[in-house]
Amino acid sequence: MDEIIYQPIAKISSLSGIKGEVRLRPLSRYFEEYIIDSRFMLGKSKNNLEGITLDLIKGEGKKRIFKFKGIDSIIEAESIKGKTLFTKVAKEDKINLISKDLM
Image (cartoon, rainbow, N blue to C red; front, side, top):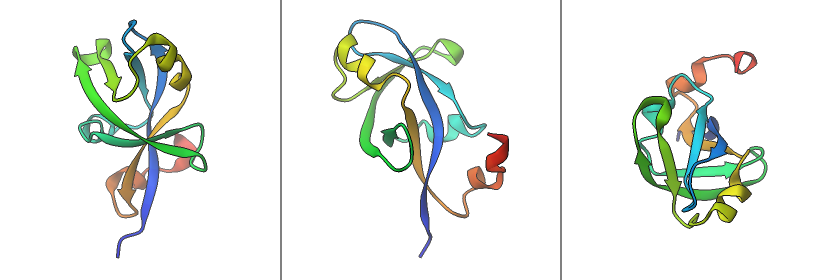
């Protein structure tokens, strides 16, 4: 059985609207491949995570805006700003081939 680990892929960097939209700062060169999944873990560290589901991606490139289920106001979005988005990966996934010291 593959060992499952949580890999950081983005940080919620800023707010972008009154309906809970946010902007993400990628933390991995594989961000584009993993952001298409809708289920993530969110937290300040790997030791304190909660599940979160991506609901919508608007725009293109660096101007994209992300919306998560249950985050429906600017006040709720403020509560997740600065937190890190983690994705569940197997130990053998290519995202783990990069040294953690480089990130």
